[in-house]
Image (cartoon, rainbow, N blue to C red):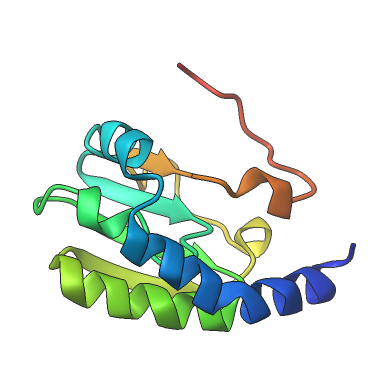
Length: 123
């Protein structure tokens, strides 16, 4: 599936992801994972912003997604959470950041959307 078709797919599903965020269906594992985020955070594939409610108030999030509709839902979620965030509408694979620009990188339920994750997972 090429990126344009994938983006269209996620644009169409934005309301479903928003509903899942509001239901907090993945609350238990999101809360456990996200509470570990510190400092400046890069959230890859922010989707509808389901993680925002679990960040501590002292983090600053750079939220990236290639779906304009998902970003719109995430912008609503960040207002509800009170977390400081800026949004970038882009495919993460086309972005470049300076070394050590982020203290934490968060990617939840996103790896299926990228052909080249280019990461090593550390547990």
